[in-house]
Image 1 (cartoon, rainbow, N blue to C red):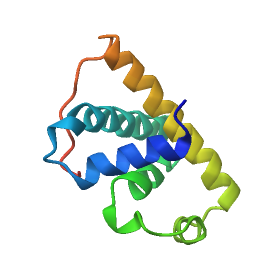
Image 2: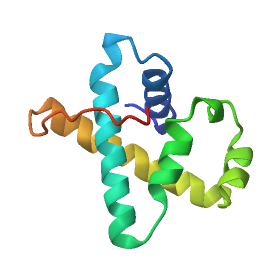
Image 3: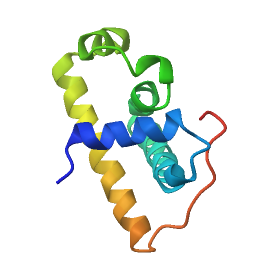
Image 4: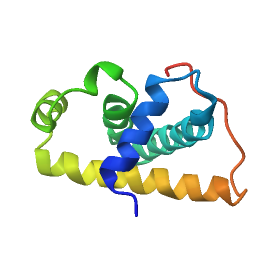
Length: 112
């Protein structure tokens, strides 16, 4: 069974090595997740997509400690942990749907 850390490492590897074809499907799932969180933010007046981007799309933040990340994002470490769990659940949901052929791949955003 994959842990939250395993999934987060996979997501970060896909961003660190954009030209690696082995990560193409992972990058597409990340794109879907980003779109989901942007929609969530719009509907709920929230900022989860910014946190998602900070954690998984900005390579300069990958080496920060959890404390540094929470301080930078101005959220508690406990809240950040809950958000990370939600992000990973969303990733796993879309990865499963794509494997089942129930999601059409979408183009990667220019912000990657």
